[in-house]
Image 1 (cartoon, one colour):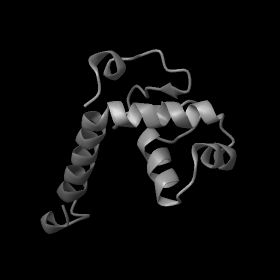
Image 2 (image 1 turned 135 degrees about the horizontal axis):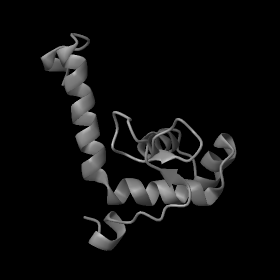
Image 3 (image 1 turned 90 degrees about the horizontal axis):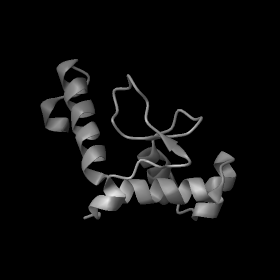
Image 4 (image 1 turned 180 degrees about the vertical axis):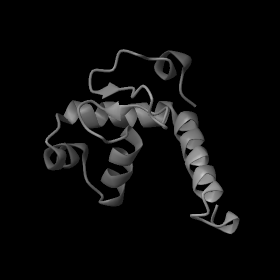
Length: 99
C-alpha cells in the first residue's frame, strides 16, 4: 500500500487529470493515454522504461512517474475498471459472467 504522502501527491510533471473524463485516473500529459494503460502495455511487451519512453516519444521520467502513480493509486485504477465493466454490462456489451 502506498504511503499517504505518495498517494495524495498532486505535483506530477508528466501526468494530468482530465476534468469531465469518465476516468478518475491521471493521463499522460498531452496524450490520450491513461497511466495504467502505458504501464500495462510496457509490462505486456516486456519493455524497460527507456524502451517504452522511446517508443512513445516520452521522457523516461514520464514513464517512471506513471509507474509510481499506478503503484500508489491501485484503488483508483481498480475503481475505474469496475465502473467501466459495469457500464459495458449495463449497455449489454458484455455478459455478467464476463465480469
